[in-house]
Length: 162
Image (cartoon, rainbow, N blue to C red; front, side, top):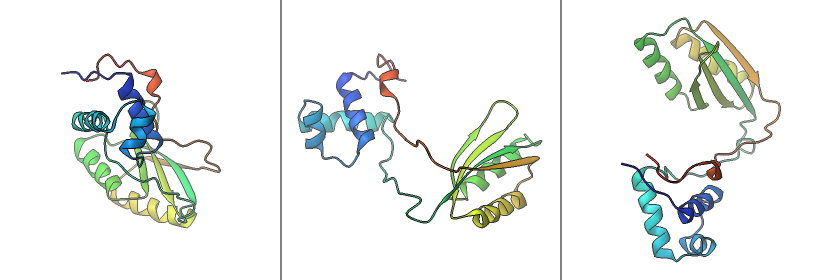
């Protein structure tokens, strides 16, 4: 079953990506609709899974998490038990903001946010004590140039989303 999005849905999604804390009245005014149809559309997109959880994005620097590391991991282990242990180790560590399994020479890349280099080393030591990895390379981000969770909605075909 596919879900058909129209231009009004795209506008609603765009507004929610900018500020999900806006009132329904504010969103309705911006998309040239009224409150009830906007609420119905949002509910339908939530029910279908297009809209996930609504969260607040915190300022890591202001909260003292000044170090962001990108951690590249190579492993010689690829069996199911190792993968399950590795994934659980990542889920158990709130410092891991993102984790991706990659194609190519590197098996995984993690985005790890910590207070400082010492905190990263504690994270690293704990991780390698739990799971065997072949090689770990950590890159310290010197400056965050762009960070967004917004999707480029103008780039998708709204004819049918599965």
